[in-house]
Length: 60
Image 1: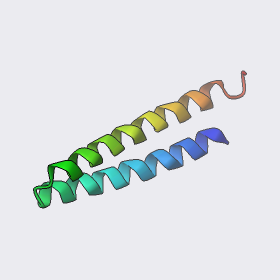
Image 2 (image 1 turned 45 degrees about the vertical axis):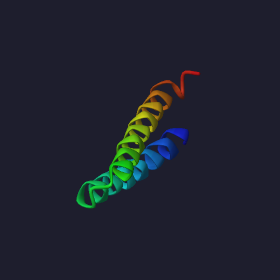
Image 3 (image 1 turned 90 degrees about the vertical axis):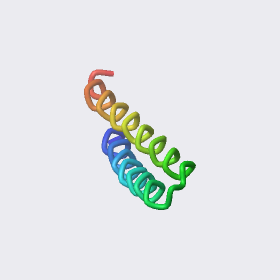
Image 4 (image 1 turned 135 degrees about the horizontal axis):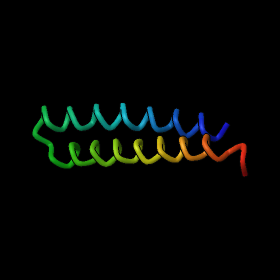
């Protein structure tokens, strides 16, 4: 179950990060663009954590 939660949070962070990044680019707001990139990376990390939990969850 933890895997699905992590993957759902990851998807949300990736989408929100992409939106922030694009809005930052469109408005020439470097801070917002950087926040978006960071949030997308956080989503990627959460996605990997979910995959690890899924792979090892039943074996632990």
